[in-house]
Image (cartoon, rainbow, N blue to C red):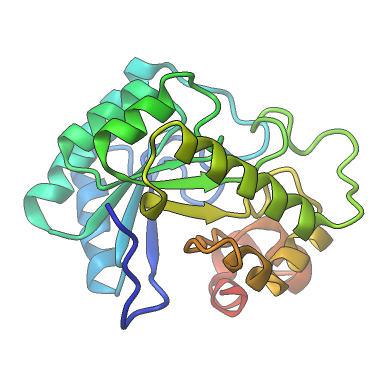
Length: 240
């Protein structure tokens, strides 16, 4: 898949968490039928991509098995694909899940570890021909908000880390035109660092790849606005 933004430089991604423990909507769409209906509602509301995730990546979240993740995401992807031609991404760090998701109709592999958590993931991504999102994260969801998060220049740190990952996965066989980069807002960053990354996205665009920004209802928006999770819609829009 190539990321073609001609005529539509901004695309909207609808996040579909089919998990019981995601921070924003955990438990609401664990049934495949409900998840598919919600995906279609997001498409009607203007979503260009539906991102399906079967494992929470909120701070402190525990991993789930490959079998559980497959049971959660594959029926949903198949259901969305049967009823709509919207682009579908699979949010996973597991090669087996990515492989099954692409076979079920997913167009994009969205990996918060930038294809590093599973040694098979780069090969799966290269072979699949799917679009690939490489995200920056310090540590893992279990550890990312612990310890020293200081950085002399978080934007330069993230830019350089993503540039290195782009070079590595291209060298391993992933087509450069398949790649998109994500600064990983909220993944091992302070609130001030998140704001700096949002304010200086041009530094990431200079990498020559599309930039995915995942800010929906995140904690730094709550800190800025004083609003609870379900009242951060306008703050999310402003951050984009």
